Length: 382
Image (tube, rainbow, N blue to C red; front, side, top):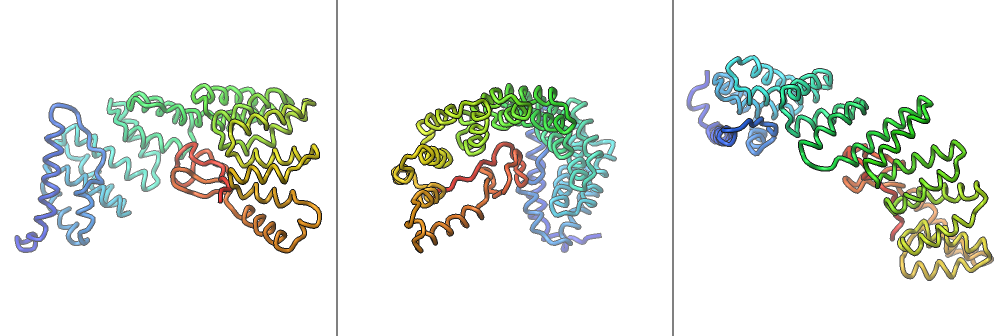
């Protein structure tokens, strides 16, 4: 048993926590309020205490069933510290309290689900969250946690159902997320050789998000594999309007499809139009220079004029390579050419606009921050 002297140094943090708990309970009167964010200022204060101090607070809270709010905060603290077993014990103990209000019981069940999720016990976590939803507790944090689990399990049909419910709860557009879920279903169908089903999923993705570059690339790729070069051209041509940053992803397929139908001039027309609409595209600059050189024109002069307006490492390398003859063999120019080649070969091809992750492959969901449609081709700007 702790004597008054040994507890005196705990009065400040306990006072803060009790005040927070009282304020939370007051805010909740008159409507159902389920605490879902235990990582509050009080939790951060507790986290600064020593293990002995936290243990003393746990003991004090355990002896006072009325301090359920404090126990929820402590459980969250232990989970954040990585002490998941202690968090589970606290939240299970709370749920065993028959006198606990529905509001606090829902909160404890939600926190226990997060404990299980942290421990990798996804089935248990999903069961608890589903029970809350079935009971009519449709708060955004619960649905978001359940959505994250379905994403991790790659169960896209369940993810779609939860995302649609979350969309109605939060009153915001989930079209981008839902479109990616349908693209994931399309990829699964392709793996099973279900071409027609895959096309249906990709088309549905485009309906949900008309700006889905991923859906357009998928439809173009499927059409091309089926020998439908015209359909592939139509799909690939949508990409620059959806997001001009993805022009590098379609220039080669567009040229390939135009040649497949015997009309290479269609690709040249696309390049001319794209240069006017997207003057900052380094990919279009380099393709245009190649076409000029192919026609016998002065690609070097074109590149120099374009680089003066929009500097671009890839364009500079194209200018050096367009010099030709003895000048390309000049030591300084040759050294610069090799330096640029090395630099461009080593650079990451893609980068996440959300967290800055550099990637060598195009991911539609960032492996780091788990955001959708935030990874884009890296520009070679100086």
